[in-house]
Image (tube, rainbow, N blue to C red; front, side):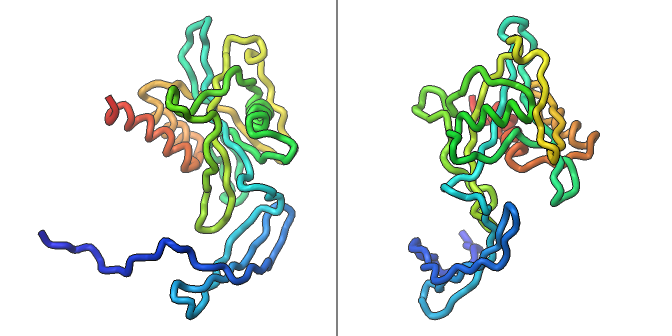
Length: 226
């Protein structure tokens, strides 16, 4: 069999040492740094630009919440709680999961509950294990968002919301003056992928990558896992 794969040097598993970090700009929320690294032969160096939050105090910066709205009494179809959040860098509304920064005094579960309630009005009734009966914790490991250009990291938490509970029947958002968020409830059915694509097209929303990956995983899972 012919091997058409490119011949490349196998990279070392040892990371190159960082020899210098320089801050070149700092704003209210973000700063731009230059990191200088030696190459693997320690013969020359390269400089990389990356963004860091000015508020960063630990290995994760925020949390996003996968909210499942269920109706145990009325037996209505379960729904996925999504939001369209206006994002100035792309000047568009982005369809995404509720999310927010975690302050030092918050634990991650408390922060997730707070962000969901503030942005959507819904109060969780239960924190779900990520993988049931396999020892998975309620909180994901630290997840990189875009490690090629920033050290921004977050946690994922999955919650269940009781839609029949009085606290969730007439919900109201508690948004900051700078936040522009529209809540969408999408039926959790085999048509989820189609419905989200239709919603994004009709409203001219951009879909955040983690939401697209989540929905694609659900869709493929029905076909690939039996």
